[in-house]
Structure formats: C-alpha cells, structure tokens
Image (cartoon, rainbow, N blue to C red; front, side):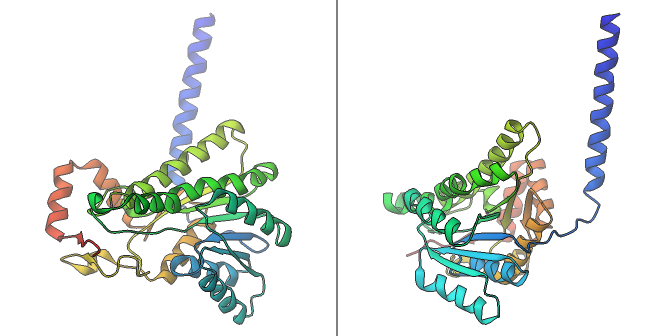
Length: 303
C-alpha cells in the first residue's frame, strides 16, 4: 500500500511540475509591466561616460535618487552637474576605484551615511583592450580582469548584505554579447564578460537556496551589442554594417533600464539578439563559422 501511495504522490508531483512548466512558458508571451523606480537609490559604477552616464540620466529622469561612481572624478562630476541642470537634485557623485576592495567599502559606507541604503546596484564599469593575447602585458591583463569582473565581487559584498537583511533590492550587471562567443583580440575582455554571466547566476541561485525560495532580491544581466562609446576606437569591421546595429549609449541605457524595471533575469540589447544566441547553441559550430566568415566580422588590434 505504501508503494502505491508513494507512486501516486510522485505522479502528482510530476503532473504539477508539467503544469508549472506550461505556466512559465505562457508567461513569456505576457507583456511585463515596468515597475517604478521612484524612492529607489540607484548606484551606477562607471557613470562618468558612455552607458553609465546615460543610465544615471535615465534613472534620475524616472525619479530615482542616483549615486554615480567613477574613477575619473572630473567626468563623474560632469555627469552629476548635467543631471542637476535638468532640475534633478537627487544626484550624488563619488570618486571610486571599483577594482580596489578597501576603497569600495570605504566609499560604500560614505554613501550609506550621506545618501542611504542602495536598493538598485548597477555594475556597469568596464574597460576594453583590443590586443592579441601574447601582446598584452601582465598589467593590462590584470587591469581588465580587476575592473570588468573582480569589482563585481567587491560591490556585491558591500551592498548585498543590506539587501538580504531587508529582503529587497535589485542587482544589474552589464555584460556583453561576447559572453556567449569569444572574439579575436578579446582573449581577456570576453572571458570577463562570460564570467559575469555565471557569477550572477550563481549568486541568484545561492540566495534562492539559502532563503528556501523566499528571497525577493532580483538579478538582471544584460548583454549589449556594440555600443558607440569609443571603446573599440572604430576598429570593428563587418561586411554588412547594418547587421551589427551599433547602439548609441542613450538607446542602450534605455533598454537596460527597461530590462531592470521588467525584472528580466537575462536580456540581450537589443532583445531580438536572444534568438541568434539560441540558434548558436543549437547549430553545429561549423555552421556558425561559415556564417561568421560570410559576414566578415573582425576587430583590428590596437597599435
């Protein structure tokens, strides 16, 4: 009798699992509402230029209190002042080297005292060096890894504890499409972006498991295509330029904010690139390289 009961119980669990799977598949096609960011304190790393600057402007426009972090004090203050000229006064700027753990914790404590508890953390800071692996110095390799990846550990350790205590918060990580496929002259940059993807998945799962599914902290990883920030110094080549669809920092930031406000766990920027990534996983590698060679994509090395 016990065996029959256990078998029926297992069958019920399987049926319930199938129903949940169908439910979650259906939710993919249901439009998501954008949550408000009013009364949120948003901290953005790398806010002195490019995507980071536009993220600061975007969140400030939506009514959030914005905290700008950048190692370049001059450009960071410029971002703050531009936002203040728009009539938005809930904006703060702090010089911070996110690759330095002690400095991150020191400035984070200052933010807590002067502004409040950060509720949305946007890890955006990043640098790009376009060189062959054997041409990169030890300092260059270390610097890219420290800024692009290690800094995420320091900011998470600095701000996540308070989010866990209050069971409220959102972490956004700016990765890249190259997280899914390494590119020529990106032997250091690409792995850092790929590692961000796995780091966010691991932290999300860790909180879910440790809280027994009760954690309300959200995680969003975004994968932008090439953005016109000047990082690649116009060294990107492609046979059909319209395919690449380079984005302005303003457009990229707008799409990133939308992804965060809609609680997407992962989002390519633009979103329709997600289908391309799925196809890359399904088709044999030789098909990918045939297409890759046909479109003639490449990145020239820095001098």
